[in-house]
Length: 264
Image (spheres, rainbow, N blue to C red):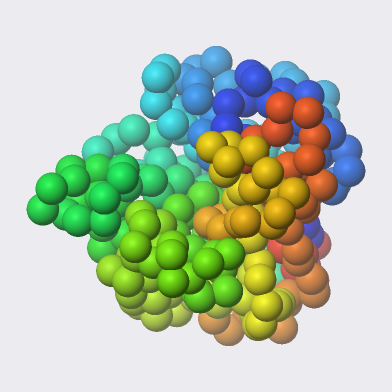
């Protein structure tokens, strides 16, 4: 089973890219963030035509929005609010597999504004509240993959310049600490670093500095976590960097996780 997460940065704007990702990566599950549309107009028929007929979406006009599209039937769909504000940042569902029912959670953690200070920055306070709630929200065992655009690069090699970036939102000491706490509390495996323990590993290259991708000035903001006890199911995974070089790309690249289970 192949699971892919991707911040598409606008589903309408990136429709052709989404189809290309589905064609090239052949995911069983595609978890998306920043769909930027109301769930009521999510293009179910388009995904069905692309081979992913089972969908769940949580989004509002003018808000961020998350979604799951699957080759296999989805059950027990949940659109819980995390962090106290319902602006379309979480949707989850289950898929029946040979390894048991697999819960999938697509998440979009708040970006956090410009200053990593909860006293002066309400957006950052919201981000930290979201992460704090994640520690208890995802507690407990089970077969579960959660991830998406978590907007935190947790390790020194998850940014191109740790000394510089640790002063910025997304890599501050407080954010990295609370992510480590969330991973520990939820008994998660960070599959990106499980597969590549050392070396630069990025999934996001910003728009503000156009040569960022060419010079690999990236951050690892997109993650797929798997509950501990299921590590033996991991068979592979990577970041699909190619998409970041396409015309008018999302600033995020898809992240892939392969598991040794089959649907049904």
